[in-house]
Image (cartoon, rainbow, N blue to C red):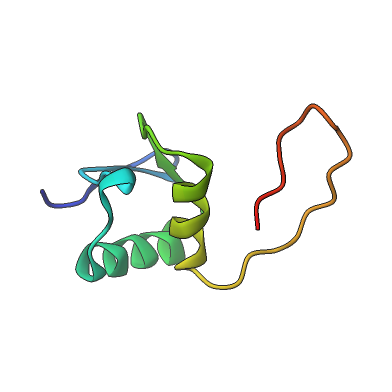
Length: 80
């Protein structure tokens, strides 16, 4: 399925449709996602049923992840 996007505001942000992160994202689709990210800065992927590990794997495709200080012990878990 081809990636489709909808602008969310006049200046930035887009909703991305036609991608299933849990199933994996092809190199061609990821190139489209990177282009959209560079154009809109904020991307929203609705109704993605993914695990924390799948989200981290997808995020790593953009480059090294930034570390975060966990200040709320109930706010989540640390992932490698």
